[in-house]
Length: 130
View 1 (tube, one colour):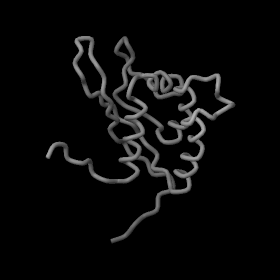
View 2 (view 1 turned 180 degrees about the vertical axis):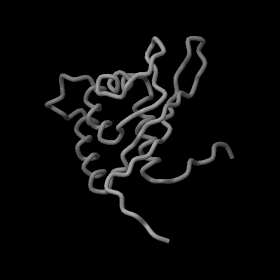
View 3 (view 1 turned 120 degrees about the vertical axis):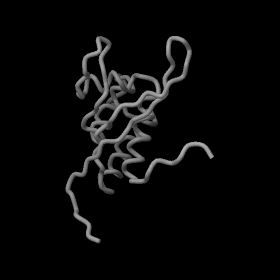
């Protein structure tokens, strides 16, 4: 068996995050994200760079909302999306402004982080249930 080194591997992967409908039902939302599979050095640098924002120590970003602080980090791991619609039903393009909007949605940031870990590990999804 052979292995081909690719300089910047990418992969589409589902991003799932829970939400609540107006009727009070819990739903699992799902979109597709196109992730960059960071190499070990890039991944370590991303973790290092994110730590001040996660701990609230990012003095240069203290005046920015947390969602805005995370836009550049998410853009380092995700470069596109599918299945994201605006209120009027039109397709919402992947850009910093729209990413910031989605990062304000409850549970979305956690869904991105989970999807990124899954695709980077390259493990099949774990079975649900027993």
